[in-house]
Length: 322
Ligand SMILES: C[S@@+](CC[C@H](N)C(=O)[O-])C[C@H]1O[C@@H](n2cnc3c(N)ncnc32)[C@H](O)[C@@H]1O
Image (tube, rainbow, N blue to C red; front, top):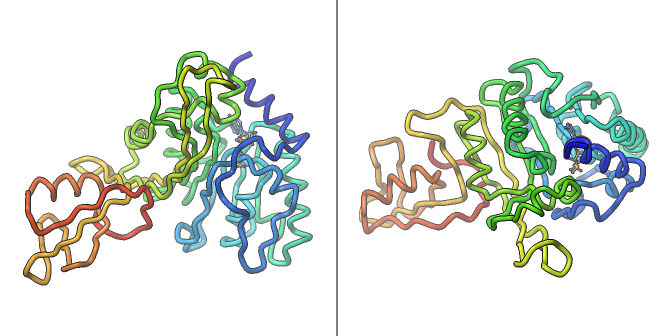
């Protein structure tokens, strides 16, 4: 059995018998006016962060969600979207599609604004999406891509890139790990399917997105996720796993490389009202300007003593250079 089949079997079980602790969700349950998330959907929250942000969802976007789980994030997307067929949900596991379908019926009963036909559920594979080229404004996945091995991960990202419209956004949440995992952990199909041993460092994850062509990357959050310790796992050292929330935007690739926002800022504190680097960046006096890593490097190379550079916070929230 391949690791992809092992993954599907695990999520078949997780659809038939909801397993609250399966993925260590790092977000508190959403509380928004008029939004009720059915109990069963909460129990089937198999994600590790959030992919839903109101600011991504202006102008009635067409939304694609790959790997539906219990459907919680599709309901959250629908909360902002409220369009018939506004959210397409894709999953390869029949039982998961069926479980989420039931959860949407319950969600309709609990939320007067929600209609089950806001969501179109389709059987399909993240590695071969049954979706037309350039047809999606916002594509999302939560805690699925980290399971994929390198070639499949490349393929899954390429598929998302293919279906997005120009300037469309791929929003994701996945575990990451800065330590090297040994081969035993890496090749343990069950641990991989449980989102515990497939994670890669943030820089590698980001590079796979920019290699696929995404011109802008936003690291929006970075949080503690799990520990693999020598007593319980096949490892000699303690392994610390984090999770990130990241957006990859299908902007054209800039001639001088991608814009990767990791939460850095520059603050000009010289004698003038502003500093202009004549490369498109104006820093108003004592106003932080969010900058991508590339701009940070270029400005620091000027070696001025009147600009302060903050470290990456991994909490980029929009605006700034580029
Ligand atoms: C870790 S769960 C995440 C579920 C959901 N995103 C959440 O945050 O609760 C992974 C999901 O991806 C689905 N899945 C697994 N392999 C897939 C594939 N190759 N293509 C599409 N969906 C897949 C599983 O059935 C499951 O619903």
